[in-house]
Image (cartoon, rainbow, N blue to C red; front, side):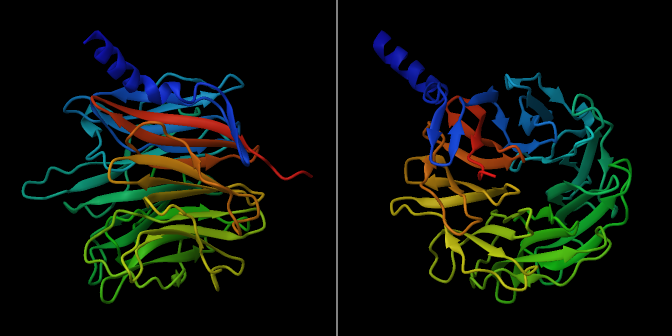
Length: 415
């Protein structure tokens, strides 16, 4: 009996013991993983961003009791030690749900912004929420009171958002809600703050035919233009990926460009948003999930060198024949190194894996396992210009839920 208890205890600890030393894999050196949050309560997926100083900001939502909490921690300096957790929200403005990570963006001047949806308790309204943003001017140590982003006052859902810092103190927000939709479950909405998140301008419908729960994403090109990617709903419930560009700091967006005709027909929402990035030469990278016309799960990466006029034939990232891929996320280094993370799912386990491209997305190296537990999911990734890379995911080993972060360095091209 004592042996069984110790065996189960060691099994519970194993996710922290497996990667106890720095290890190398093709294209990357990974340092020991760290647990940034843990408990028997529910945890959201994590968000990651580096700032210009190399500090890593990690944000998540948790619900240890009836009141949800928005939290953030930092990993900074040469020691890469975890800082103390900062609670961002007040008790009255906790998160409405924990199914997605909070929005997170940083800038080199110490500006950090976080977003989440709070409950809208209008009687009779289902899944109603309001989108909030809280900003920090001291690198994430303290935050302003949250500001409401949606300007409609309607008791509907305002969620699945992404944040991006722009020039001249701009803060861009894109999300999904029910306004402006046209024969679809949701519309892509956008707004901009010109004062770092203190106030927000009028909301604008970018596309009225969006998949209602596939999170859009924003990115900035080297020329300063703003880009967005989302899953569009076409006639016949076809759910394929499009991108659009703004050349006037978010005042208007051009017509969306289709990344690839997958012809994926799906009458519900897959909860699998796309990913977007640029390198310093202006190459556009798009990653996404699809099941095409044969209902086979695939994750792809395609690139464009002509502002989305044309895209390359996509690279299929998942190579295993005994698992299914899910929840792809990308990060792109200015030199064109691409880090792709996703879940590999079998009937008994989920694990988080990484693949790297050193040639601007043309080819990828071997699959590198990251997680050690039986159930790891919701991976995300960030790269800073120095070559430091961060990977994060959630792990579940009853009765404990964890958010795990692992840093490392990618092999940069020699000058």
